[in-house]
Length: 258
Image 1 (cartoon, rainbow, N blue to C red):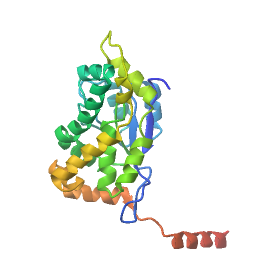
Image 2: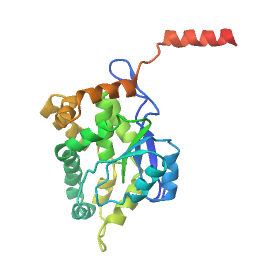
Image 3: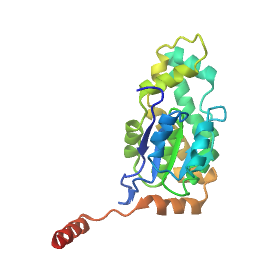
Image 4: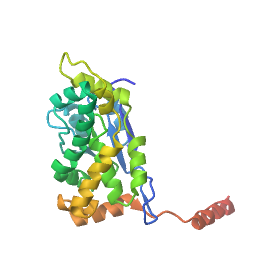
Protein backbone atom coordinates (compact mmCIF):
# COMPACT_ATOMS: atom_id res chain seq x y z
CA UNK A 1 0.00 0.00 0.00
CA UNK A 2 1.40 3.38 -0.93
CA UNK A 3 1.22 6.68 0.85
CA UNK A 4 -1.53 7.69 -1.58
CA UNK A 5 -3.91 5.02 -0.36
CA UNK A 6 -7.19 6.04 1.20
CA UNK A 7 -9.57 3.89 3.18
CA UNK A 8 -13.03 4.41 4.56
CA UNK A 9 -15.24 2.49 6.94
CA UNK A 10 -18.97 2.69 7.55
CA UNK A 11 -19.35 3.47 11.25
CA UNK A 12 -22.96 2.28 11.21
CA UNK A 13 -24.58 -1.12 11.07
CA UNK A 14 -24.06 -1.96 14.76
CA UNK A 15 -26.76 -2.93 17.23
CA UNK A 16 -27.45 -0.56 20.09
CA UNK A 17 -28.09 -1.57 23.68
CA UNK A 18 -31.81 -0.80 23.30
CA UNK A 19 -32.20 -3.29 20.45
CA UNK A 20 -32.02 -0.81 17.58
CA UNK A 21 -29.09 -0.19 15.23
CA UNK A 22 -26.97 2.58 13.77
CA UNK A 23 -27.89 3.12 10.13
CA UNK A 24 -25.48 1.84 7.52
CA UNK A 25 -24.36 4.08 4.67
CA UNK A 26 -24.83 7.30 6.62
CA UNK A 27 -21.46 8.16 8.19
CA UNK A 28 -17.97 7.12 7.13
CA UNK A 29 -14.60 7.29 8.88
CA UNK A 30 -11.97 8.21 6.29
CA UNK A 31 -8.19 7.87 6.39
CA UNK A 32 -5.74 9.24 3.86
CA UNK A 33 -3.87 12.44 3.14
CA UNK A 34 -6.65 13.43 0.69
CA UNK A 35 -4.40 15.68 -1.34
CA UNK A 36 -4.26 13.95 -4.72
CA UNK A 37 -6.68 12.90 -7.45
CA UNK A 38 -6.44 9.15 -6.78
CA UNK A 39 -7.46 9.55 -3.16
CA UNK A 40 -10.21 12.04 -3.91
CA UNK A 41 -11.61 9.81 -6.66
CA UNK A 42 -12.02 7.10 -4.03
CA UNK A 43 -13.82 9.50 -1.70
CA UNK A 44 -16.06 10.64 -4.55
CA UNK A 45 -17.54 7.13 -4.79
CA UNK A 46 -19.09 7.59 -1.35
CA UNK A 47 -21.41 10.29 -2.65
CA UNK A 48 -20.85 12.42 0.43
CA UNK A 49 -22.90 15.53 1.09
CA UNK A 50 -21.04 16.56 4.26
CA UNK A 51 -17.37 16.21 5.20
CA UNK A 52 -15.72 17.02 8.55
CA UNK A 53 -11.95 17.59 8.37
CA UNK A 54 -10.10 17.21 11.68
CA UNK A 55 -6.64 18.05 10.35
CA UNK A 56 -4.72 20.87 11.96
CA UNK A 57 -4.46 24.27 10.31
CA UNK A 58 -0.89 23.59 9.12
CA UNK A 59 -1.84 20.38 7.27
CA UNK A 60 -2.45 20.50 3.51
CA UNK A 61 -6.20 20.91 2.94
CA UNK A 62 -6.60 22.92 -0.26
CA UNK A 63 -7.17 19.97 -2.59
CA UNK A 64 -9.92 18.68 -0.33
CA UNK A 65 -11.51 22.12 -0.04
CA UNK A 66 -11.58 22.41 -3.83
CA UNK A 67 -12.94 18.87 -4.14
CA UNK A 68 -15.82 19.62 -1.76
CA UNK A 69 -16.63 22.83 -3.62
CA UNK A 70 -16.71 21.03 -6.97
CA UNK A 71 -18.95 18.24 -5.64
CA UNK A 72 -21.32 20.46 -3.61
CA UNK A 73 -20.17 18.85 -0.35
CA UNK A 74 -20.62 20.91 2.81
CA UNK A 75 -17.12 21.19 4.28
CA UNK A 76 -16.34 21.71 7.97
CA UNK A 77 -12.77 22.35 9.09
CA UNK A 78 -12.59 21.57 12.81
CA UNK A 79 -8.88 21.23 13.57
CA UNK A 80 -7.43 19.03 16.29
CA UNK A 81 -3.67 19.28 16.84
CA UNK A 82 -2.79 15.85 18.20
CA UNK A 83 1.02 16.05 18.54
CA UNK A 84 3.84 18.41 17.68
CA UNK A 85 6.47 17.48 15.12
CA UNK A 86 9.25 17.42 17.74
CA UNK A 87 7.16 15.01 19.84
CA UNK A 88 6.65 12.72 16.86
CA UNK A 89 10.38 12.76 16.13
CA UNK A 90 11.25 11.87 19.74
CA UNK A 91 8.62 9.15 19.79
CA UNK A 92 9.92 7.60 16.59
CA UNK A 93 13.30 7.08 18.24
CA UNK A 94 12.31 6.01 21.76
CA UNK A 95 9.95 3.12 22.55
CA UNK A 96 9.29 4.35 26.10
CA UNK A 97 8.63 7.92 24.99
CA UNK A 98 6.37 6.69 22.19
CA UNK A 99 4.17 4.78 24.65
CA UNK A 100 3.84 7.87 26.84
CA UNK A 101 3.19 10.08 23.83
CA UNK A 102 0.39 7.92 22.42
CA UNK A 103 -1.36 7.80 25.80
CA UNK A 104 -0.99 11.56 26.21
CA UNK A 105 -2.30 12.26 22.70
CA UNK A 106 -5.60 10.50 23.37
CA UNK A 107 -5.99 12.28 26.69
CA UNK A 108 -5.12 15.59 25.04
CA UNK A 109 -7.81 15.06 22.40
CA UNK A 110 -10.57 14.72 25.00
CA UNK A 111 -9.11 17.23 27.47
CA UNK A 112 -8.08 20.07 25.16
CA UNK A 113 -10.30 19.54 22.12
CA UNK A 114 -13.65 18.62 23.67
CA UNK A 115 -15.47 21.61 22.14
CA UNK A 116 -14.07 20.71 18.72
CA UNK A 117 -15.17 17.08 19.11
CA UNK A 118 -18.65 18.26 20.11
CA UNK A 119 -18.81 20.55 17.07
CA UNK A 120 -17.56 17.76 14.80
CA UNK A 121 -20.26 15.35 16.00
CA UNK A 122 -22.83 18.14 15.78
CA UNK A 123 -21.74 18.79 12.19
CA UNK A 124 -23.09 15.34 11.29
CA UNK A 125 -26.53 16.87 11.79
CA UNK A 126 -26.25 17.86 8.14
CA UNK A 127 -27.17 16.29 4.81
CA UNK A 128 -26.14 12.64 4.66
CA UNK A 129 -24.11 10.67 3.88
CA UNK A 130 -21.33 12.35 5.83
CA UNK A 131 -17.68 11.57 6.34
CA UNK A 132 -15.02 12.63 8.79
CA UNK A 133 -11.29 12.24 8.50
CA UNK A 134 -7.79 13.41 9.27
CA UNK A 135 -4.43 12.49 7.73
CA UNK A 136 -3.65 9.11 9.26
CA UNK A 137 -7.23 8.34 10.25
CA UNK A 138 -6.19 6.63 13.47
CA UNK A 139 -6.27 8.77 16.60
CA UNK A 140 -8.48 11.81 15.99
CA UNK A 141 -11.00 9.88 13.92
CA UNK A 142 -10.75 6.94 16.33
CA UNK A 143 -11.86 9.10 19.24
CA UNK A 144 -14.63 10.77 17.24
CA UNK A 145 -15.96 7.47 15.90
CA UNK A 146 -15.97 5.91 19.37
CA UNK A 147 -17.76 8.89 20.92
CA UNK A 148 -20.41 8.91 18.21
CA UNK A 149 -21.11 5.19 18.43
CA UNK A 150 -21.20 5.19 22.23
CA UNK A 151 -23.58 8.15 22.63
CA UNK A 152 -25.88 6.56 20.04
CA UNK A 153 -26.02 3.40 22.13
CA UNK A 154 -23.48 0.94 20.72
CA UNK A 155 -21.88 -1.09 23.53
CA UNK A 156 -18.25 -0.37 24.42
CA UNK A 157 -16.97 -3.85 23.51
CA UNK A 158 -18.28 -3.45 19.97
CA UNK A 159 -16.89 0.09 19.73
CA UNK A 160 -13.37 -1.02 20.69
CA UNK A 161 -13.55 -3.98 18.33
CA UNK A 162 -14.55 -1.60 15.52
CA UNK A 163 -11.76 0.82 16.45
CA UNK A 164 -9.28 -2.03 15.99
CA UNK A 165 -10.90 -3.37 12.82
CA UNK A 166 -11.02 0.05 11.19
CA UNK A 167 -7.49 1.11 12.13
CA UNK A 168 -5.57 2.24 9.03
CA UNK A 169 -2.85 0.06 7.58
CA UNK A 170 0.25 0.64 9.76
CA UNK A 171 2.47 0.46 6.67
CA UNK A 172 0.70 3.48 5.20
CA UNK A 173 0.75 5.34 8.50
CA UNK A 174 4.48 4.63 8.81
CA UNK A 175 5.11 6.05 5.32
CA UNK A 176 3.11 9.14 6.16
CA UNK A 177 4.88 9.67 9.49
CA UNK A 178 8.37 9.20 8.04
CA UNK A 179 7.52 11.87 5.49
CA UNK A 180 6.80 14.31 8.32
CA UNK A 181 9.90 13.62 10.42
CA UNK A 182 12.74 16.15 10.34
CA UNK A 183 15.63 15.29 8.02
CA UNK A 184 18.19 13.09 9.72
CA UNK A 185 15.76 11.44 12.14
CA UNK A 186 16.56 7.74 12.44
CA UNK A 187 13.32 5.94 13.32
CA UNK A 188 13.63 3.35 16.05
CA UNK A 189 11.28 0.94 17.86
CA UNK A 190 9.04 3.79 18.94
CA UNK A 191 7.75 4.16 15.40
CA UNK A 192 5.94 0.83 15.62
CA UNK A 193 4.12 2.05 18.73
CA UNK A 194 3.00 5.28 17.08
CA UNK A 195 1.62 3.67 13.92
CA UNK A 196 -0.36 0.96 15.72
CA UNK A 197 -3.88 1.21 17.09
CA UNK A 198 -3.99 2.07 20.81
CA UNK A 199 -7.14 0.62 22.39
CA UNK A 200 -5.85 1.08 25.95
CA UNK A 201 -5.16 4.77 25.30
CA UNK A 202 -8.62 5.20 23.76
CA UNK A 203 -10.30 3.49 26.70
CA UNK A 204 -8.38 5.63 29.20
CA UNK A 205 -9.42 8.83 27.41
CA UNK A 206 -13.06 7.77 27.22
CA UNK A 207 -13.02 6.77 30.89
CA UNK A 208 -11.68 10.17 31.92
CA UNK A 209 -14.30 12.03 29.92
CA UNK A 210 -17.07 9.81 31.29
CA UNK A 211 -15.87 10.02 34.89
CA UNK A 212 -15.60 13.80 34.80
CA UNK A 213 -19.12 14.35 33.41
CA UNK A 214 -21.13 11.32 34.51
CA UNK A 215 -21.49 9.96 30.98
CA UNK A 216 -20.11 10.52 27.51
CA UNK A 217 -23.33 12.30 26.60
CA UNK A 218 -22.73 14.53 29.61
CA UNK A 219 -19.20 15.18 28.38
CA UNK A 220 -20.35 16.19 24.90
CA UNK A 221 -23.16 18.32 26.34
CA UNK A 222 -20.63 20.08 28.60
CA UNK A 223 -18.41 20.62 25.57
CA UNK A 224 -21.24 22.35 23.71
CA UNK A 225 -23.26 19.70 21.86
CA UNK A 226 -26.88 20.84 22.09
CA UNK A 227 -29.48 18.38 23.34
CA UNK A 228 -31.72 18.93 20.33
CA UNK A 229 -28.80 18.25 17.98
CA UNK A 230 -28.16 14.93 19.68
CA UNK A 231 -31.86 14.12 19.49
CA UNK A 232 -31.82 14.75 15.73
CA UNK A 233 -28.73 12.58 15.34
CA UNK A 234 -30.53 9.76 17.11
CA UNK A 235 -33.40 10.11 14.64
CA UNK A 236 -31.21 10.28 11.54
CA UNK A 237 -28.55 7.74 12.52
CA UNK A 238 -30.43 5.11 14.55
CA UNK A 239 -33.20 2.89 13.23
CA UNK A 240 -35.44 0.08 14.39
CA UNK A 241 -34.34 -3.43 13.52
CA UNK A 242 -37.05 -5.58 11.89
CA UNK A 243 -38.01 -8.53 14.08
CA UNK A 244 -37.25 -12.00 12.80
CA UNK A 245 -41.00 -12.65 12.70
CA UNK A 246 -41.43 -9.60 10.49
CA UNK A 247 -38.60 -10.70 8.24
CA UNK A 248 -40.12 -14.16 7.90
CA UNK A 249 -43.54 -12.61 7.10
CA UNK A 250 -42.00 -10.37 4.44
CA UNK A 251 -40.24 -13.37 2.91
CA UNK A 252 -43.52 -15.33 2.82
CA UNK A 253 -45.24 -12.40 1.10
CA UNK A 254 -42.44 -12.19 -1.46
CA UNK A 255 -42.83 -15.89 -2.24
CA UNK A 256 -46.60 -15.47 -2.59
CA UNK A 257 -46.10 -12.59 -5.03
CA UNK A 258 -43.57 -14.63 -6.95
